[in-house]
Length: 112
Image 1 (cartoon, rainbow, N blue to C red):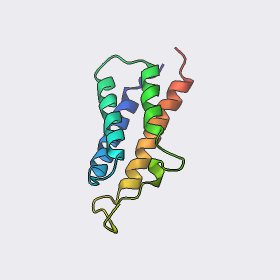
Image 2: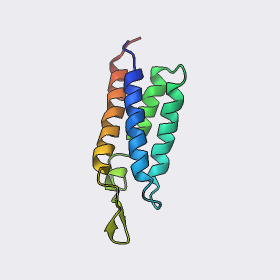
Image 3: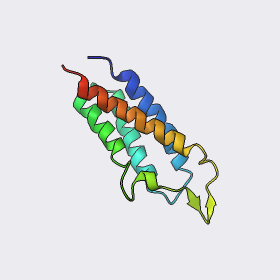
Image 4: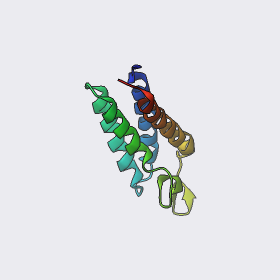
């Protein structure tokens, strides 16, 4: 089994960036979801965790991507204008998804 810590650390870094960006929109509820995922990831990083917990985190992160009304539909607009500071939202969002997917796929292929 490979060491999952580097992948978890990468997810934490990307979640922190995305959470900071989403905090610029006081009317968005997405910040709450990603901050919760970030807190969970940090708690896991500071403990002995198993693959099931890591997969659960990855699935939680990925659960808001896709489908009608999902995070993919989120548009950072306020009063008819694009919210300043959100220019890197798509990139940050993609990095979070890719990092979570990598964790999920790694855990799906690892055999204890």
